[in-house]
Amino acid sequence: MRTLSKRLLSLAMLSISTATIALPAHALDLLGAIQLASVNDPNLAAVRAQRLAAGQSTIIARSALLPHLGAEASYNKININSQSAALGKLDYKQTTWGARLTQPIFHWDAWHQYKAISAQRSQQEAEADSRTQELFLGVASAYFDVLRAQDTLAFAQAQENALSSQRDKAQAQFKVGVIARADVVEADAQRDTATAERLSAEIGLTHAKETLNAALATEVDDLSPLPESIPTPNPVPNDSKAWAELAKQNNPGLIAARFAATAAAKAKEAQRAGFLPSIDAYASTGDIRNSDITPPNPNSPINFNAGRQSAIGVEARWELFAGGRTLALVKQAGYQADAARAAAMAQEHQIVTATRTAFMTVKTDSQRLAARQRALRSAELAREAAQAGYSVGSRNIVELLQAETRVYSASRDYANARYDYVMNSLRLKALAGQLDEATVATVNGWLAAK
Image (cartoon, rainbow, N blue to C red; front, side):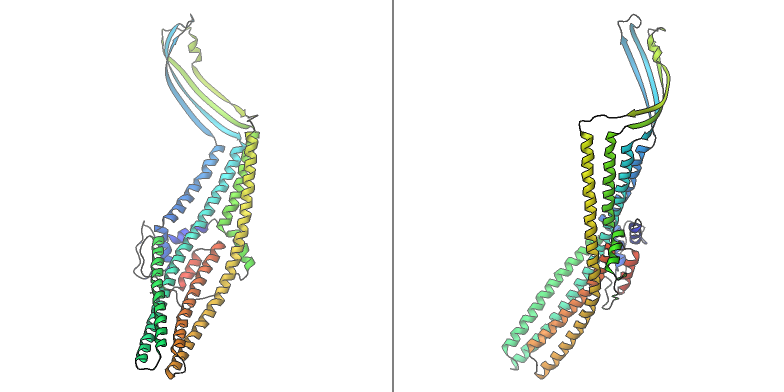
């Protein structure tokens, strides 16, 4: 799982070396859409920046366990007006410099804070993986929503044209007295309904295009379509329990929740440091020089403080009582650790349930798609029969219009079933933490070249 986001981002950045990418001369496919989003989507740029920032957190925390070297220097002009006969009135300049090296020996808080921040870094990386998958799913959803809306509009336009033609025939037959006025009214009503559906489809297509353009940060007009016939295999492995286990191991959101629980447990241990001492080893050196002593007084004790000073040793600090603050912090951290652990367990249950549901949905989608295809063929045969019966007078116009409407309704249902199968397959892969370049490339291979 640690390499998932890297694989996704490397896929997205494939063949991209500039801040923008030109639209291809041919129709844009799913891989091309992801490449555009990877360059232009500010949300994905934010994910990359967050991963880089998370990489620095452990370095910062580890620094508390490593040696610290400090240096200091000062220059002072000192004036002393003492009542002591030995000193009297004295002016002099003092130059001081020093260096101190400290090596932590025992810092319970620093060690467990380092462990907590390491877990937090892994949590943030897993969250970045999750957001990357969500962004790619969003691009795929926007892409197929445009194709779905295009199909819906095409079906609506074809239905409107077919019903308009039937309405014109009905009017012509009414004028010569072949059919009644009620049949013409029914044809008008069916045609007007089709017109309203076509207008709604136009609005839906406009909205879908705007959503995709926003995701890609550019306008796209031509997309590679999804053919009428696509592979619809059952998920592999073909078992809901196996998919649930994959999700437990690889789902980035669940991994992030577990790391959050680990970080909270380590933070609790860090708070226990308030009951323990901290121990450091140190080495220091320095030099004090006095100059321009006025009036000169070789017997002045001020000279006794000058010279080089060096020290090496071990120092310990132990806070014995803090007004109950330490105990309260430990309890608070313990409650937070319990909450994080419970949240991770709850998320695991949600992910497992969602994965099992997604598995069953994809498996059902495969069967539903075949059923929708058969229903479309049946509707087309029923329309042919209605047209033949209407031409010989055994069927009325209402039956013919209903048969015509059922064909376009079945066409929409079949198209929607194809898009549902594709998107639900991608969602199942994402829940199991398997939305990688191979998955995207497989779906991209289903698209038809234009």
